[in-house]
Amino acid sequence: MSLQAYKKKRDLTVTPEPGARVKKSEGALVFVIQRHKASRLHYDLRLEMDGVLKSWAVPKGPSLNPKDKRLAMMVEDHPYDYKDFEGVIPEGNYGGGIVEIWDKGTYTNLEKDDKVLSEKSVKAGLKAGSLKFRLKGKKLKGEFALVKLKGKEENSWLLIKHNDEYAVDTEYNSEEDTLKTSPINKWLKEHAGDKVKKKPAPKLPSRQA
Ligand code: MN
Image 1 (tube, rainbow, N blue to C red):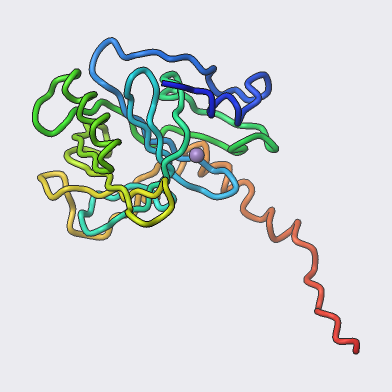
Image 2 (image 1 turned 180 degrees about the vertical axis):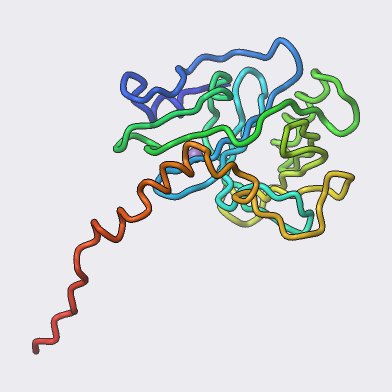
């Protein structure tokens, strides 16, 4: 697995993000969902495979309601150590903003709780454009699927919750499943007025002939 793209996008002497090191879990395969306030607030889903984290940016965040199909844009592989990363990426750098861990845990494939089989199944699923897995997180539990969109951009997938005992049939908003005191929410609160204050007075279009 290559972390070339990860390295290329970042100046690792400036950003506090982890170095591009390939490393594997001793135990079960891990997953993490990070909430990331960059130019836009979004979520990043990462699944361990072959010593890296396969990664998708999910603009609206995950849902526990099987009716929701959440767009998930596949992005560059991230290093295994990224599973623990929280912090501030300085402005002007790739992904500049704040990252916090929204949920983390382990995952397996659907058939059997077996690490080798689970990794194989992810690899096959990535190729086939259809990935199924079971998450064991604090917020996200049970079966999920990632399905690649055909005929769309190369990296567009949908993240869908399967109907199981962890699914909900009410509206689900991951933002409401986030602590009000989370680092990003604190930051958003402190900077709530910034945009208004910084925004210059709108200029009327020139009507001169
Ligand atoms: Mn991100």
